[in-house]
Image 1 (cartoon, rainbow, N blue to C red):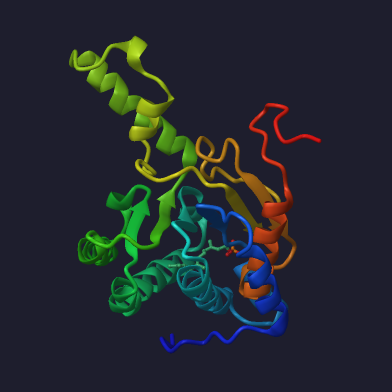
Image 2 (cartoon, rainbow, N blue to C red):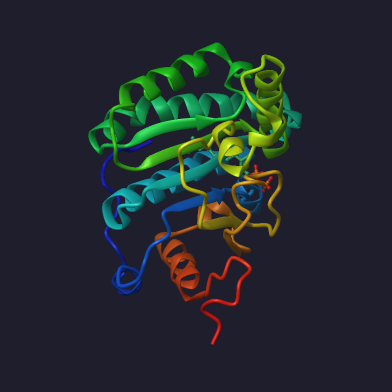
Length: 258
Ligand code: FPP
């Protein structure tokens, strides 16, 4: 995985960038990076080749979000609670890939003022990956640039149940009145505590939410493309943001309707 700057923008991307910078940007973009395996199979390559390429695409999007968008929060769905059902070899490969990504990128990310966060059941991951995650979190926790939030062994229903359990325990311990549980308090018990809700959720290759940020994405705009993740580009990213900016967001009211 090269760590040199790979980004010189195409004329079309530069045009789109100038356009999106004229209007309010999303604060939080969340991405389901799907289709790595199918992309590799189309090329007659092993699925792992698709995942490797997927990391390069993710790195490009992270770099671009820092350098050109000054984005506040970027969430990337790297491994779901359902992904354990894949062949052992692929699961091991993905664990190793995430570990290498963190090891190779941590200095660079810290220098760019990125604060790394991980959401999911980290305790079930291999110990070496847990250590790499903790190291990256500790190294970056005083930064205040991009919140790079990696969803690893993450499932939204599990996250919601975990939040419910923690609130029930506080009620049982007499530390919390059931009547005082409101949306704000509930959000404090989610992995995304302290982060803004996603404004824009992007998914490649499919059009499903797949147990991703079910609570937090209540009012998010959804943008999908049939292209698999390794083919996702800066131009597509900017197109998604531009589409987002053209949609009136009413949160259920009639405000902003002509
Ligand atoms: C979906 O493709 C992708 C994944 C399950 C893993 C995504 C992980 C990465 C891109 C690497 C980790 C990234 C970072 C930033 C550490 P798929 O295998 O489900 O593809 P398919 O639907 O074609 O089978």
